[in-house]
Image (cartoon, rainbow, N blue to C red):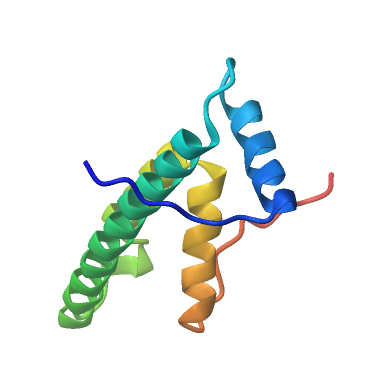
Amino acid sequence: MKVVSIRLSEATAARYQLMADQVWPSSIPLSTYLKQRLEEGDAIAEQLASLRLDVADLAAATKQRDGLPGGQPDAVAIETLLLLRAVANPRAVRIVHGELQRLGINPWQAITRAG
């Protein structure tokens, strides 16, 4: 195992330690928290890359179809969206929304109705 040292300002280190203390019921070392965040970031990046491929495949399949009968929504796309929304944590949703905005796509938002 290789040990990697990084320098953080006191304010940044305190901010990350506070985040670590909020996430875990018992205090963990700052280095452990940062390592976990890096690993989570890698996992999210891999998931995003996989989702990009899936979206590209879905887009290609959609272009090949002549259209859906009666203007019915695509059940596979809706089911996929609902499943992903059910398992995604708010941080992952923010990352995906950021990626969509980077690509020039407005993220979908539910229409809320006052009533």
